[in-house]
Image 1 (cartoon, rainbow, N blue to C red):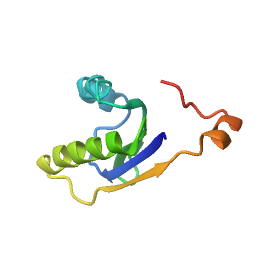
Image 2 (cartoon, rainbow, N blue to C red; image 1 turned 30 degrees about the horizontal axis):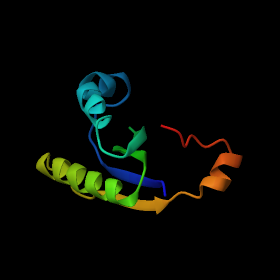
Image 3 (cartoon, rainbow, N blue to C red; image 1 turned 180 degrees about the vertical axis):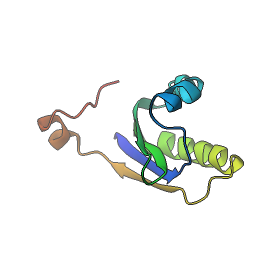
Image 4 (tube, helix red, strand yellow; image 1 turned 120 degrees about the vertical axis):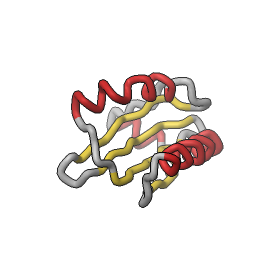
Length: 102
């Protein structure tokens, strides 16, 4: 069953295009994560938050990525990581045109 992983954390920046320039190599590497279908990057410059919403094939893949990403953020000195893994109701999501494909 597909699952959503939501992660948000305090982030001083950069944001917008500067974030794209700085984090493109990371974004490209995320594509190789086992079980990942897609990621939507999120940011709030006003609140100094960043994160993402991910769709994984299964909870095990999402949990493995959460562990890896949490460790990476901790190594960067990031504290206050908020994350949750939720099952996707694929039937209702399809009615509302949710992007469940790879």
